[in-house]
Length: 193
Image (tube, rainbow, N blue to C red; front, side, top):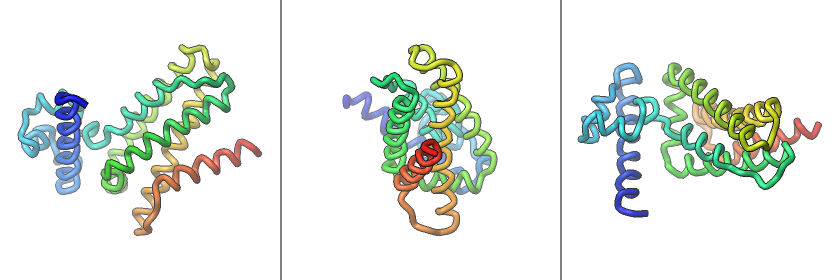
């Protein structure tokens, strides 16, 4: 990574950390982009250079997931193989989110701030639309198959996150990646049936 990339990565982390701190302290509605900028010591304009909104700063992983999955070019041509490759890529992004250590904080906020669930639903719709369009554009799958594959990948992500959030809410320690793997395994069992 060059100096510019290092600066960008540091700024992304600082803005997200400030957004998380402020929303945890004051709630989503009471937190503004101006508050986030002030906490980091930058201008609002700089915040908007990195994130489109305060919610995007809280949960940037969804855009990362969309970008990662749209970039997957499976060497396989069968729908099941393409789905498997996309689930593997989704797991890598999930693992990256877990490593960044904000995973637990975001999960707790999703429980505390119900308005964030609407944002998540919008992001999931964007994921399905982007991924199914990319699969169709590549000629990998037809319209219906692309839509089904995109919905299944999105559903696996959602179920793993919700399972983790439930475990957190109930005060149980768990391994988020194990939950993701369990989700995919259960999905495989259903599809095999």
